[in-house]
Image (cartoon, rainbow, N blue to C red; front, side, top):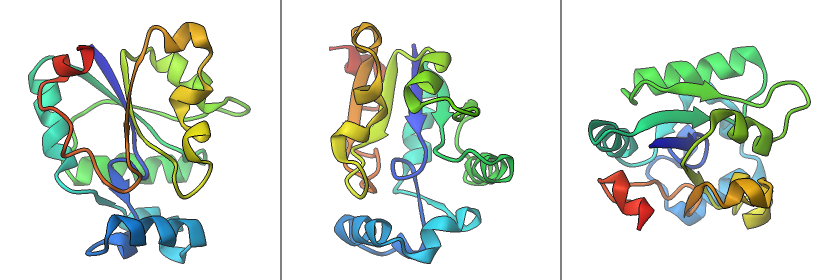
Length: 162
């Protein structure tokens, strides 16, 4: 089983969001607070690294998808994942004119864990929503509230299949 996890807003957040409510984090993001562009200071949302370790320990292959496109920003996200001890996994990103859906299809996940895009496009902007129906029928969507983390998701990834 391969789980593709969106990084920003799902498992990582801007530093100004620390010690704030989820609603405040969403408002900061919607308002374009400068910290949302300081990727080098991004921090995990809750205990996301532990949750993903549980999935990996139970046999899941982990992959990540970032919204970043510039090589230096992609490298920062890669470093943040390592710095905060997230499990190893390939980091996917949109190449040139590629869409989120095309990047996700390239990853070939069984499950996509992503936030609901509340501060931007809403559910219509979610990766899963952008997938062709032929791919939606093959992939399980596990949406979470933006900046709410994934701590509440099951430790056993097999539970996504039920």
